[in-house]
Amino acid sequence: MEEIIFCCPVCGKKEFSDYLEVQDHFLSKEHFLIQKCNFCGFRFINPRPAKSEIGRYYQSDEYISHGVKKNDFLSRIYGLARFFSIKNKFMVVKKYGHSGKLLDVGCGTGEFLSYCHKNGWEVSGVEPNEKARKYAQTKNNISVTDQLSLLNDHSGLFSCITMWHVLEHVHDLDETLETVKNLLTPDGVFVAAVPNSNSWDALKYQGYWAAYDVPRHLYHFTEVTMHTLAARKGFEVLETIPQKLDAYYVSMLSEKYLTGRANYLKSLIYGIWSNCKAKKKGMGYSSIIFILSLKRR
Image 1 (tube, rainbow, N blue to C red):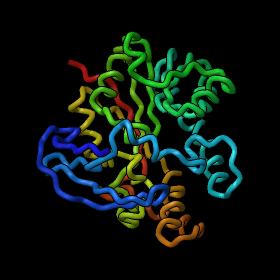
Image 2 (image 1 turned 90 degrees about the vertical axis):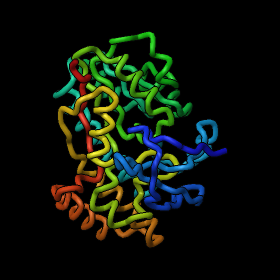
Image 3 (image 1 turned 180 degrees about the vertical axis):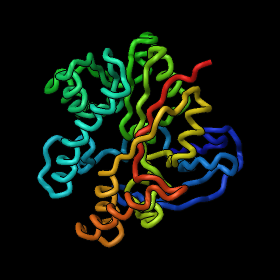
Image 4 (image 1 turned 60 degrees about the vertical axis):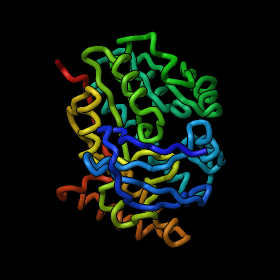
């Protein structure tokens, strides 16, 4: 069952243009159409799988976002990158967040929250994947619920809410951002990391760019449209921070989708080149962290 989007999720306008047709290289091999709003430029797949149907596109042992122990080379690279990424994420939270309660939406198996807890934060998580959620609860001893909406009664509870490559997955964009606003303390920060579909590696690989990851990624942000979304939903962007490691990992996967085999040297070169090109106007890094606060009236 498919859902057709009639109004832009950001600006509400109803005129779209076809942007790019992309295959689900990872799992289903189905094709999905990415459209672009003619007014604000926001990109999204349309039509898209209904919320009740999207789960089947995640049903693979190879979906390593929730992988705990895997032995293939790409997974080991991912695990090594995640080790450094957790520390970098914590430094972001430490710099911009106020000590107190931290909520990580899409917390996976809870390694990031566990690290934050060991460094003085009171932590909670949201994770819809049952296997990952149970691991976080039993192995990492983290309080995790399966839906963000279940926390709506805790208004103003969290001084920091994080979504590390999660916002592009959520069907209910408006509802999710309203809940985040409700849960934040008045001086709290919302940290959202998303892929950037205007990056050099995105433009180089086109339909083979791994970070399109259709249909699991419903939205395909750029730096401009993320600023537009934030402003329209009652946030202001305090700062943007590049995730430079992502260019290398995304290039490795993209190269494999394009050629049928991994080319690590070429992926390394393209990752370096993407990061070098990131400062060019209109591009930006392969993935970007946005630090947002509630808009002051």
